[in-house]
Amino acid sequence: MTNAVATEREQTAWPRVLIVEDDEEQLFTLTIGLGREGLAISGARDSTEALAAVETIRPDVILLDVMLPGMSGIDVCRALRDRGISTPIIMLSSHNEELDVVLGIEVGADDYVAKPYRMRELAARISAQLRRSQPTPVAEAVHPRQHVAGRVPIVSAGGVTLDTERHEVTVAGREVEIPLREFQLLRELLEHAGRVVTRDELLERVWGFDYDGDPRIVATLVGRLRSRIEADPDYPTHIVTIRGVGYRFNDRP
Image (tube, rainbow, N blue to C red; front, side, top):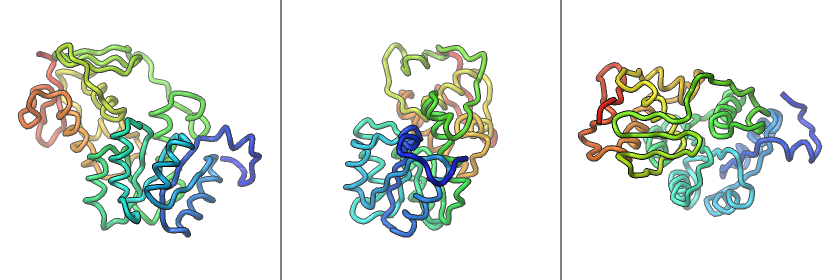
């Protein structure tokens, strides 16, 4: 994508990635590898450095190791979301930390990548997060953004209204805060209200066709979304599970 050596002026235009990793060798490898992919890399080695760096660097994407000294990566993710920081977070984990990854998604992570990393795959995951979170030239620096034609800015069904331009969701007239990924998922369901949307379709439309992580992420995100818009998440009336197929958003109140 770009030469390994770049001027300081060029680097300031690159998307900013914060890597939170306590292993010095891993951090060095990621810094060099992702730097060659046209990304401006900053590093943090523990939770304290990470929380401070997010405020000062204002990264476009955060790579967050699950296992950190002191506060875990999951707790760091939770703390960032509690502060209202919506920056995309990709969890970095070993294969035997699957339960921790699921928990990380539940507290607000957007994706995860298992070790050992394939640098091109990791760069593609970062690219996907940039495209979804920043419809601006900063996302174009890594991968051209695909334009989706024919989508209306406001969609509504069953008493739930979503406004993409204002990033607002109302349920029976009451405004509800919805994080970005859940917002994207809700939009897909609302745009197909009354019809079944399969899990694979949601994976492709919300996470991207190249996503090859844990498909259970869809069920996890649906559960989080239900907790925000359903009167009783245990007995949902808006988002209905069609067992073995996917989900349907009821088009009636």
